[in-house]
Length: 172
Image (cartoon, rainbow, N blue to C red):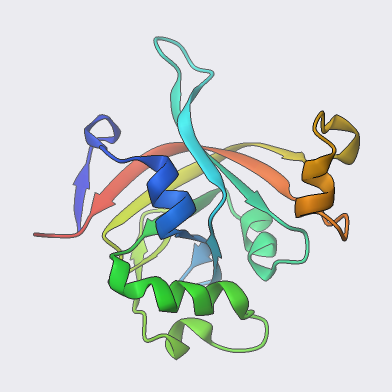
């Protein structure tokens, strides 16, 4: 993996997140980690001075095992993969790390990065330092159809904003 400056990062977040998906991972190889697939999220800038901090926004439901690790740790990673790994990402998003070693089941190879875990197979990894967390609450929805469409069980996500502090790309 090669580290690049966050300002060198060129990607379309709508495509990367919504269509190609990403893994949200928290924890360490030494103390345990878990990962989950996500197709909802944001990237941009907020707060800070001189243009804002480079940030990611992720959304995690309370029943997800990965949430325990995100809440425990100060950092999380976002990993993006080439298209040939989409089936594996589907598996990782539909199976729980509570019940099995799902990473081994898809033959991914975890590797340490400062403050977290990514995977040898990842083409891009963002290391994010948590700076804000808030629950999504029903009464704040202006468009109530989103609640019925996305939250019929009322299992609202927690939203996390993380400062992107490191960016790694696959070695050429």
